[in-house]
Image 1: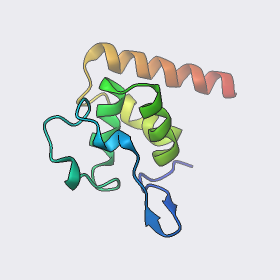
Image 2 (image 1 turned 180 degrees about the horizontal axis):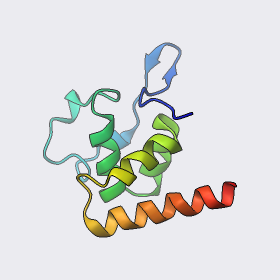
Image 3 (image 1 turned 180 degrees about the vertical axis):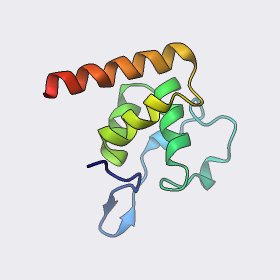
Length: 98
């Protein structure tokens, strides 16, 4: 069953990490207006394309592997090399889990 893009909460309030404050990921948007649920696909695409391992870990904790894999599979908004890398990465992860 695929998890929704709804982020996890901590004591009833949404928590954010420095990932959403990184200019290197969100240089062209007002980072204070990013909504973890409403902009989930956009956030995940940016992390897949420009993020580091800490950003990926954050995204996995927030959105779950299945959701991130589905964003990578759609490849919309990702450059072809990044899209191919992430499709292969998640395909291998699934193969090892089986």
